[in-house]
Length: 276
Image (cartoon, rainbow, N blue to C red; front, side, top):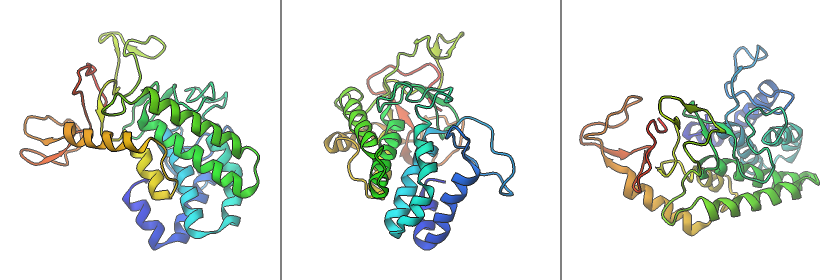
């Protein structure tokens, strides 16, 4: 629940919002730091046993920072800090079978489960944005509680930001850096490609991490000029009439109504079976 409802809850019922962060870390965290992304009820029953979601796990760290800054309750944040550190470190933990940031360089390269219930492979601004925001948030929370690891989180953030800005931005928008035929990842034998990827596409959520970082008061996590150009590209390439666009999933607009397509490929390179 990392959208509009979550933000309204925070401002209307801030105590409840902080309690939800506590419940998340108390009931959803595994010893490795992995977070189950669905809270099972009643509280205390077995955890949701599936892949951790990069956007959910890193987004929870940003939410913890946001709730702390808006409440000013450093004692509350300090009580969650060990769990927050474990959640962040899961990115490079040896028990993370998906190897999000196995080489601990501030860039996600492994299999990254996300909110569309599929995995992205290789670096993208979309999921690295959540990671960059979480690293920056953790560095600031760590400084506040006197944790010496805060400097390392800040270093990883800066290194990851510089890499994504330099390599993933194509002059118009941020793309996914992936060879669709890379045999390190699960290639569909009939397609000869990895399914459900963005590749060279202009993706609706490419700078969503920046949006969340701005709401939380973290500032710029990507180059501001590149972010503006990316947003202009999303409007230029993805805002379209739904006439002629088949939608096999949830329908939010149809016929001559206009809306944002999840992904377009203005420069070619559309995967045979792209991100849904």
